[in-house]
Each structure stands twice: as C-alpha cells, then as structure tokens.
Length: 206
Image 1 (cartoon, rainbow, N blue to C red):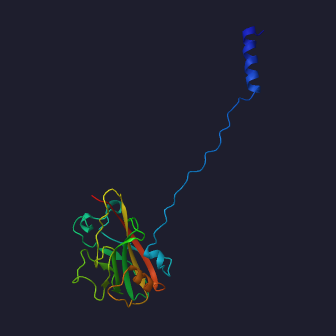
Image 2 (cartoon, rainbow, N blue to C red):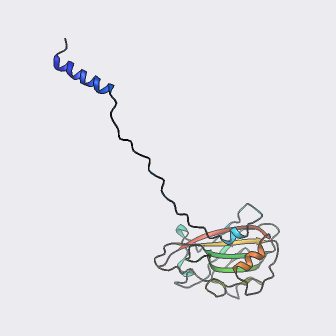
Image 3 (spheres, rainbow, N blue to C red):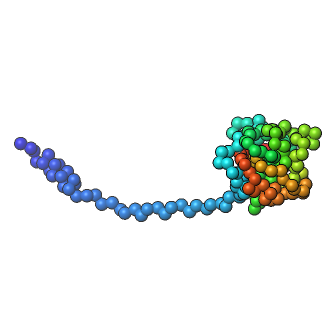
C-alpha cells in the first residue's frame, strides 16, 4: 500500500506533466545589414578571354601566403618581380598588367603596364631593364605617372593589399603610342584575348 507522502508526490508530478510550461515568445532577430562595397573591375573583367580555361601564371617572388618579397616593393629595392606563364595556340603577342584594387581610388592602382611582348615569350626576369626586356615590348604609364614597374607601397594602417599579376594572350599586336595608359591598352585588346590568367600577391606596409 502506497504511503500518503508518496501519493502526493505522484499527483504533483502528473499535474506538472499535463500542463505545458509557459514560454515567452521571442521575435526572430532581423537579418544583419550588409554593406556591399562595389568591386573595382580589373583588366581581366574588362577584356574577357575567348577561352574559359585560365592561363597559369606564377612568380617566385610570391612566398608563404602569397606574400610578395620585400625587394619588389616601393619600400625597398623596387625591383619588378619575375613572372612566368603558360602557353596557348595562336598567340601573336602578350600583355602584362598588374593592378591593386584595394587602393583608395575609384579605379585599381596600376603598378605595371606592358604590351607587345613577343609571342615566344613565357617569362620576365626580376628587375627588368631595357637590356633584359624582350624585343618589341612596350611599357606604359603606371598610376604613379612613371613608366614601367611601380613597386607596392601601400599606406601604413591600410592592411593587406592584393596585387593582381594579369597576363593576356592576344591574337594580334597592338598599335598603340608609348603614352597609352591602362584604358587605352584594355580597349585595344578587347575581342583579341585568346586566354588570360593571374597570380595574386599580397603586401602591406612594414
């Protein structure tokens, strides 16, 4: 026979099971507001390639985490980095454009602009000079208003900047004046890009 205290305990437990616990209604949290920064189109986006297969591009100046070597920056020796790329059929000339879309300006900062590299060219040496440049290669103005390579020199406190080493295989040779800038080169090669690719380097102020 069950004792009275045990019967009372069972009755209380059954009553608790039969009555749902009251819970406060919690409204769903509103989705976070996302501020999407407009992307600055790179030359690769402005002059798309006819082939969907990317051209392999590499540089021995890119170390762990794709960090660009100090000697290639504007803070140090300002040497143009070595660059190498693959091949594709029908190439008549090559274009090399290096851009930084993280710079505080409406368009990517152009660090290197070169065109009419001979069809047989597959690489550029470090510290390119007039003596080591492929014959016929033209170098245009960078965003620092100089000709040739302008080494990365991001302002202090702006974090990592990304440098897009873009290579384009063209089915033509560009007829452009030496003063042609990035917009002129991009406009001239539209519809003539057989294949393109890039290697991305990272650098920040020391």
